[in-house]
Length: 348
Image (cartoon, rainbow, N blue to C red; front, top):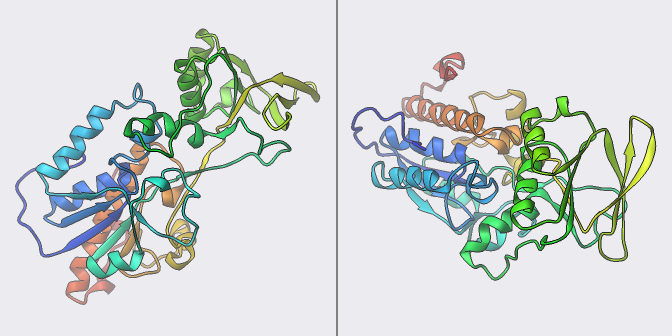
């Protein structure tokens, strides 16, 4: 994966430094563009390895890790990008509310970055899963998609706080029909689950992952139940059954389960969302493309738009980086009023 693909010739270094929060696809794309234009780029990430959810959430059969590693090495060796891993940029939320926080050996504030860099790009992604709020959702054996998938990829780093989900020989029910749900299904199969059931509140034609994926996992023996909405989880301390409502018959059904994984989406995890005015950025109510309420602080990727496909995250990172360079160029000449919003957009 070539994150520095926009460099077509050697670029002279410019006397500007940018800090990027997050080493996922949007952060890596922004780093590639900025480094290609001669900027000194420092990327901060709480995890021990760059790549974000491409490395720590998505199974390697979908995105081979070695390709991401080669792209990161290219940024380091050819373009001079510096990666500062195991570093958390603290925010208004408590530590350890997001997956991967326990890897952070160093904690910095946003002001540390704004003081030490000419500009900052926030690409911190979506590191919290939406959780079920039904009865029994706090029982042992109930996972969110990130709680289930993250340790499977993170365990190789032998961290004392990471443990693999034990699904061998067990009945697993996955709620949802997006790519995260399919990733959970595939991972559960590899870990030796005895039975896997995928439960979705709509039909196969409405599944976000697409009919092809649903057909594929059914061919592998996964049970597909559509038009079922979770009503309650029952069990004595640990999961025993999932109660679902069949919208076709309006009847309640009881499904045996040892493990239930809720794959119903992730939540953006920005540092200081209110201070940055991210709601206004999302609505487009800004004076500069992708710039937050704090001058010289830009935002891109899932932290701005919510979970999206990798291509959209890359596009967002490129757009924010391009906007940042134009802003600094005009600001250096006190010509910010000449900014052309339309000209700053990158054609898809």
